[in-house]
Length: 308
Image 1: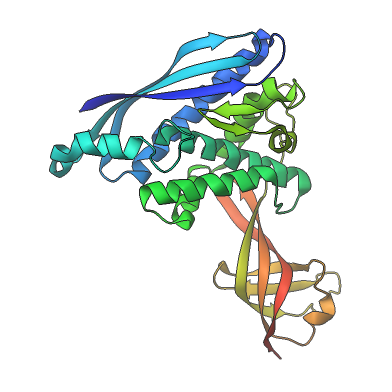
Image 2: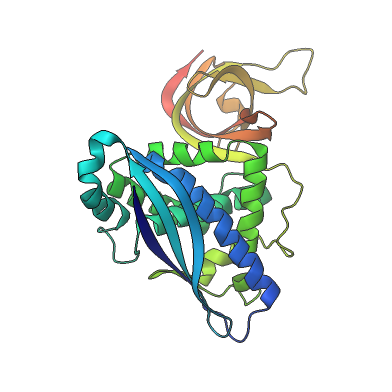
């Protein structure tokens, strides 16, 4: 076993004194998100086992700017056949070499969790898949982690999504995301720096304001884009004109799923076609058993990939 201590610096570029209640909320949120980081780390580092962890405050200043300096302490172990490689693995895998912005891999994963939750919150408000600035930041961080760990961005995204597949986990994450951003949002969306990476006001402004920091009792659907999906269409039942379209997309689910067309696609583009290849957004509803697809939104149809 080995004990490692990973630094994490968070600076809210606020002016004046931040209320104690907002600082406590932000600290609680950081502590909870760090637990997700600890749970996710073994998925990205082969053979790693974390036996114990704690997020400790190294330094805290309440006056402008609000500075939170943490140390994430981990007691780690590796598989027996990897023990000889523990020291270089710790150095190579916990320290990020491809960017000068971060002190450790833990900071990157912390931000991925934070902006994954932020993206969910934006989509829930918009009730659609959005190309928001929080999602752009999430995509950037996932690409960075993919390069550092050798995993694909798709694999990383799937690992993170599976962590928050259940309703309780998703609700908890959305609640703590709201708490984390409170000091910034109450200070006109002040920029926040993670180690040496500054997230600008424009990005924070797009994240829904939680007010008290308590998660709202909402149905947080998830919106996932897919390109070039084969859709096998079933026209509306003649005696149920309000039912609309349905399709089977085997790459998504073997079940028939409600279909909705979005501009610039028109219903006439689908009429009399049993099959189309399309770009879609799949709406997944959060249920007691996790997320399940409930609607396919068609955003584009590939020319020539249609059959009657």
